Length: 127
Length: 127
DNA sequence: CTGTAAGTTTCCCATAACGGGAAGCTTTAG
DNA sequence: CTAAAGCTTCCCGTTATGGGAAACTTACAG
Image 1 (cartoon, protein in one colour):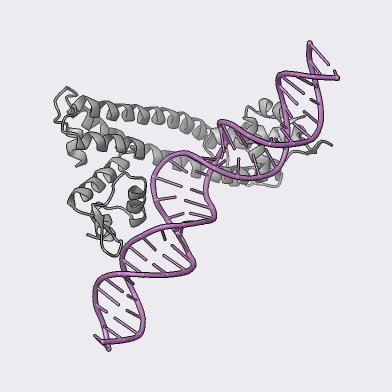
Image 2 (cartoon, chains in turn green, brown, yellow, orange; image 1 turned 135 degrees about the horizontal axis):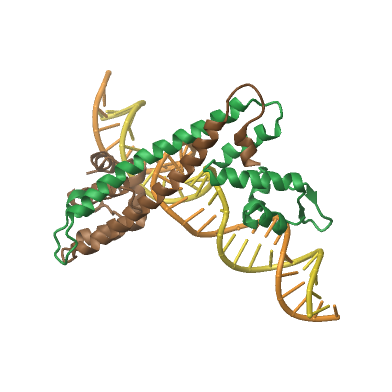
């Protein structure tokens, strides 16, 4: 199938699919005589796989890793779990960081009257 | 004062201070005869201001906006508050998104035995 | 006073993960 | 058959810096 068909089936923009091919993450099965990328079902499954993993926040590098495990029938589920767990820790760390920012900013916004006068605790804090 | 002094005082890397000068966000007061950037107290205060704002997650564009308000003694605190509030909404949206990712990933990790066998719900889910 | 180490300058390349758009070829629909 | 749509490669832009080279200036040890 041609790139737009595969892209749509995987729920990805064509540009992204082309990009994945360029960086060797998911290559098309081959090329048509005219040089068009030709995707088969295997490649399509990989595209969907990567799409979902990206949506879960895995980086391209991590996707490459997961894809390697995905294709390796010898892999242990422990290997996959380890990657996912590390990613879970990343998310938790980001959540904690965001919470701190949130609380600090909320405190500032709450302290600011937001009226027409120029005195503003937010700017005061930043100075 | 020279760039490294200002950078250290503001708690920023020298490279970053130079970058801020390049994009016209915080320019040095002038140049020494040898062409070295020369920072005065006003510029230093702005550097610190931007450093704090960046730490609160404001983008460079938003910093430029805040800096404009900061320098404008005519501004109303409402203007500042509006920017901060928008930023607060950004944070909350990001938090909600992260929570969804977290729950989904945690469910997968919890379902995965993580042993030496190859069957893995995480990969199953991604396929 | 001098040699050298440290600091500064500009300039260019790299990051992550694409998106936009141009120029040119191929396929498809009317 | 022709025009539109789709495909190709290529190049630039994004965000906010970081790394490093080559050349110059300053600062300090001896």
